[in-house]
Image (tube, rainbow, N blue to C red; front, side, top):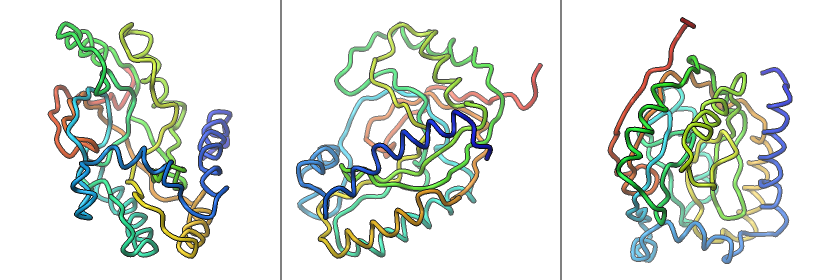
Length: 244
């Protein structure tokens, strides 16, 4: 991928957060609390993490991705699991892997039924063509969140995000500034030895090509359990292959 200003800016944004993970010699319990709060407490005690019920409306692609893309991301999950061994962690299921443009409603946010048709109209007005998302590198953040680092050709994902932000005045202020695919969460400290191994793995993979994704559609989704474990698709829209 050409090292455009957009690519360089995204890479710097990923690095700024990812680098903070390695300032300590293990994950801090205080940081991991943010990840643990996404799961049912009893499921953490029973060592079988289950995401909490939520009410979130969002626009995404994937759900699922193409098989070759899923396989590339699964390989990363498996590599990390081998290092973690019995350390408590959670992986997003293959059919639930996706990439987010914007959130229309957070769990604690307000909602009006009349916003549904406005969102659908805004989605119908998306002019972005089918585009390529390059997955180049993976990182783990201080809170244990593991992500695949995405780079959207010609700022395609960002153009869709900006269209939704300009069109819908009620969008929450808090929105992603990345083009990443969430892969899962590390949910407890791993110990200095494993942390050192993770450090070596993530630095090796920081800029490695993982897979390439053709994004050809978007989905307006009501998510009722974190990480898309339970969801209803309210609208799907194919992107155009050629300009009209």
